[in-house]
Image (cartoon, rainbow, N blue to C red; front, side):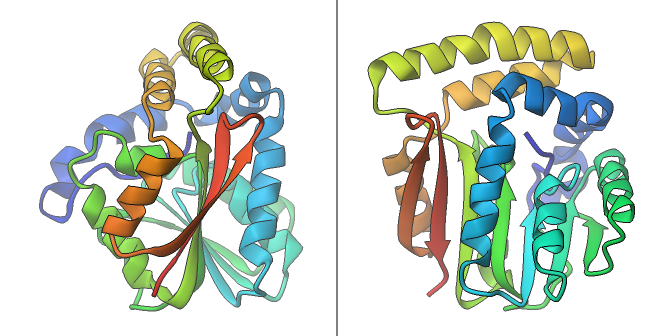
Length: 247
């Protein structure tokens, strides 16, 4: 659950505040709760996404909605000669991310604060854009989804890839039921209690339970101009890595 602006270009100031305030309260416990509530599976899933991002030897990569910088730091450490940009709208989370980068002495990684609907990058700036557990924040019941996805498409080079690691809807009715109950009873309750940010973890649980199926996500990305949509289910389909390509 990383943070990213929930506003379109014309209402960026007013529209972004609820999620921005919400995510501003959780950085101190954020990484610990990610590990606890996923039994450290989040690290395994991010590592798989990193492998997918690096598979075509990119030169410049963006971690969109980087949050506390988990995926950006992994990318920068794996490929010291590759330029990595972590982009997010939460200043408190980015401060945690910058501390991580300093800890590893990374000089090929920079973090930038800003609105995902109006990114300060030229067209065709990146070989790959990755996003880990922040995709729901730009697409779940969000009237401005098209702005975020069109900006992502704009900043990718032709043939560039958008790599998404996110919760998904298992095709097994039993696993889907268990996953939904776990989010409703454990993630929302325990995450909210430990973090002190009940709203943030209630949102996380609710959005995960009602998020797109693989078919729904494919349709969304195709309608926004991406092609060659591919899904890799993770852990019985409760999460997935989705790859989409810019024509």
